[in-house]
Amino acid sequence: MTTLSDKPASNDNRAAALTANRAVPIFMAALLGVFIVGGVGFSHIGAVHNAAHDYRHSMAFPCH
Image (cartoon, rainbow, N blue to C red; front, side):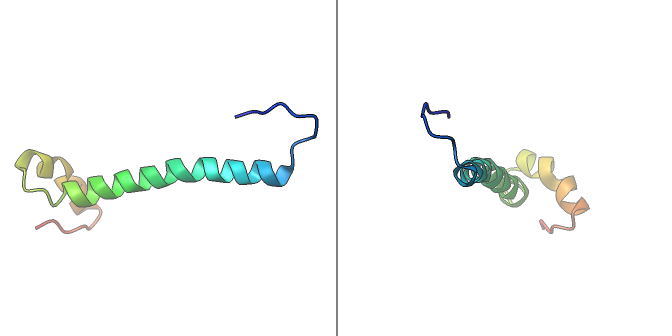
């Protein structure tokens, strides 16, 4: 997001904004990964469990 201002932008503010803007997508991607590997692997629905089964075993996650 840009703003119109007469004063120059501070590098500290810009760095903080970039850090905050990057943190949300990284956190959401990690949350999605935990849900897929953890939640789906322990699902009692056969088709959903089988979709994650081989990956879980290749990464040494138990699911039985």
